[in-house]
Amino acid sequence: MIAQHRQPLDTPALGRVVSTFNAYHLGDNFFSLHYLRAQAKAYPEIHFTHAAPATYLTQLAPLTADLPNLSLSDLSSSTSTSPLQRAPRLDTWLGASGWFYHQPDRHDFVAIYHRHFANLSRSLGLACPFAGADPRDLLFDYPALAPRTQAYTGLRGILVVNSAPQSGQFQSFSHEGFDRIIALLHAAGHTVYTTAPSRTPDALCTLDLGSSVTDIGRLSSDHVDAIIGVPTGPLWPTFNIWNADTIKTRILLLDTERVDILPEHTVHANHLSLVP
Image (cartoon, rainbow, N blue to C red; front, top):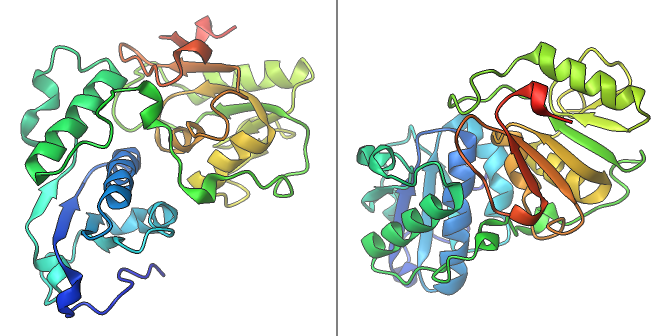
């Protein structure tokens, strides 16, 4: 169970409260909390609280665990006597009020998120923690992602993110197409990790192991040399400060969007047949 608050709620020492929410997907909430982590570190006198769908709270909890002034709550709990919950909530979703859909650079993931974070900062009256607009600002840095080499005992291999995308970012997604890639990689002698079941029995499936998305991110730092997949929930924590330069190849499957957080290590493809 998530501990939503880490200090008495009715104390005058609570100070300013910034309350946000994101009603959309797990990945959207990951980036909302990435931004809020940076603000919580920059403004320790402010308490930041973020509301998300209840089904995501366990997966999101590691992003707040190390920061006493950042907490999570259930989005469905719309009323509360807590001062944390009474603060007006700012919607941190990229598409709030249709903003994202009217931007000419909406297919440039790095550029649009930097502008989005600058807009959130203006709305909150705070300095933007990513003012330099460095693509690597979007790398996750929460401590639970730090490598733990004892967690998996296999050889270094290839992570295939074969989980179905939820936002229409890769229309030609098919489990059969990914099964073909996984089988070819295994036949070529690679150790293969997957995020969803496949038809290759020897591929290690993180879903079957009960791994969280943070576990997948840590696996990518411990035991992965390359990543192939659609940018969706399980893939995002693999963009982290611990593996930024150890994973030499990332093949991202997207129709039109480009995710150039690490452009020197990234190749984009718009169809599974184009994956080498």
